[in-house]
Image (cartoon, rainbow, N blue to C red; front, side, top):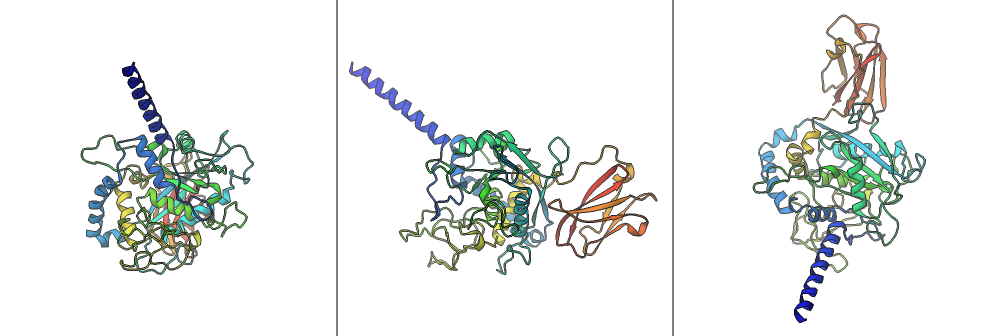
Length: 460
């Protein structure tokens, strides 16, 4: 009898252990909240969730061992790396809604969605005269721009906004959010996927108050670790609450909530997608008890040591034994959007190493998703058209290989907005005056009859 009781207890303990493991694999605990109760970023917890569900996923230490020599190689060729050409990354924004009219609640307007791309380009290019500009000597232009996808995976045209109606009104758990992502994602080797959702307002919900979270890049070629390439590929990207997507600086009527109304949640989360850590290194420091952790690191020497995250703007020095004040203006802190305006040179090195080596990230550099599909009846002469000089400063020339001329052209910026057009009546019309264009990526659609060809050029 005693033996049977012991066996029953062992069986019960085993069942409880299995149940506990299942819960840990399918749920998260979000404990780091802003004074107003928001979860500024759930990416750290998301990584724990992914590792619980995929034991082969690289740990933080394994990732750092993988990326460190690649960063060092870049630093050894620093002058070349700093002069690297601009990378253009195609964006698809999946707007997840449950049937609301466009522009209402979570079914956000095109204008709100596009305003976020404007912010990303300002922040990642450190654009002069914008909130993304800074005068810090370690402030970096990352050389990355974002454009709205112009073609779907099936080759048909799109504006880069994918509206998806789902029965779920509010996303309460990470598991339900991940299932939605897997069902709606576009090819992550050709598109950078962003999902906007309505995270649950229910106080007891797992995702209550979450602004966003992102997937850290995968490693490649780790010795002794198989099955890592392509891990979690079908959920790669970032997901953001619709109330933290876009900027009120462009259209004040947006459904974005202060102090996270300037589009910096996306800048922060994409930083994670490209390999950046929080500037306090996700240490165990606690402001409430005045106990900083000055041992954790984000592996970037030019982001001063911080003992904890910041939820306010201002001047702070949480690690007095370390040089420099904290950097709440860094996109990888938790400070309000209005504080943020800097990625550093060392952060750029990490991002460059990821974009050159990480699965899916490196593929985005050669994606053609920003180019509109060609008309099916295109002429051979359109295919031979070239642009020069490219990049262009003041004049962009259109070179044709025959005496025949195209009918005209239209120029679009990286948001798909028309910025110029011209009818071509003679060879003297085969140029574009780019003097008034801001620096960045543009697309020129050249038309001949019912055919057209779209080419990309850079204004420098």
